Image 1 (tube, helix red, strand yellow):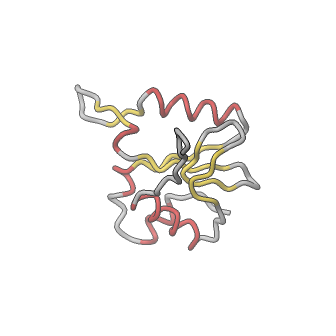
Image 2 (tube, one colour; image 1 turned 90 degrees about the vertical axis):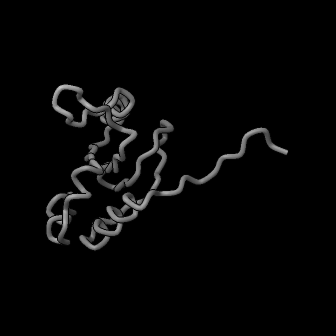
Length: 113
């Protein structure tokens, strides 16, 4: 019996919603892609090296002065590393996506191509 079994990550409802919207735009991509360097991307378009990180609450800290969301250090580091490896990263924060009511608003918030 193996000591460590790698399991496939399960995309969140938010990730599935964003992925579906991207497919409707014709933005072909892989979900839960792992780069050669071992970093995971929620959504990745390999030919353009464009990744989308669908960021839930665990990616943020709360500013105690004004209550705004601020990316945590791990999220910032991952974005910097992916950039150094040639990826362009777009973040889709949960608190922005959840407020988009129409399909047109969702379409306009996502990359094209």
